Image (tube, rainbow, N blue to C red):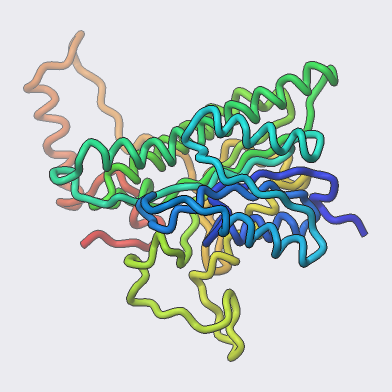
Length: 319
């Protein structure tokens, strides 16, 4: 019986550890040939000497299981290196079919304390990194579609975060980058649909070196997604990977421009923002006094610290 991703080539960025590693292994298990990208820096802030070891270890694990994989250790936030990553997939396996953007770093700080470099570096790796690989993959699919005279197969799975949905007060750079990724995803979904390409974003919750502080109070059972004693770890990255495998598959042809939250055996589909209230001026143009008379009472009836963030939707609470 053919595997759902058999004959397809996938790139997974940031695949040396954590969620990206689980995704690369799952795509390979489903039959894809995988280009494992990881810059290999040991620090979650994007610091320390780069190493080829994390990417190569995942490649070896895929090969040991009977799959096909090759490593790429470039920086996806560098435009030329991102182009080289896409070209490696094409040169090695003939074409690119699936792009999973996962690479990222953290440099948390309150907005009043954050430095320019802390802002720029996180936006660069997350948002620009997603754009760079998407740009080259989209150009590849567009060229193939023109040559074929019709749609081709292409899948993009981007990585957003609940930090975007819930605000995340101590992560203005990260939340902004993850919100930008959702905008990039929906724009890409509209632009590439006619070429046969879908683009979706996920908000994964998992225990990785990126979230070790967030989930410090929730010790992990030993043994991965399901421990030897039968206790599941709802924060294991292995819970995220199957959704990525599905979105990368032919079965998900009708899923495009969506945002999905995933963790611990749960997948939630987020709705686009809806208008909560609407006010029209009684005159030709609003005045300050009229807006005061309309908006002040409206917001006075809502919770004092309520924001646009969707914390309540996901069962999260602000302090």
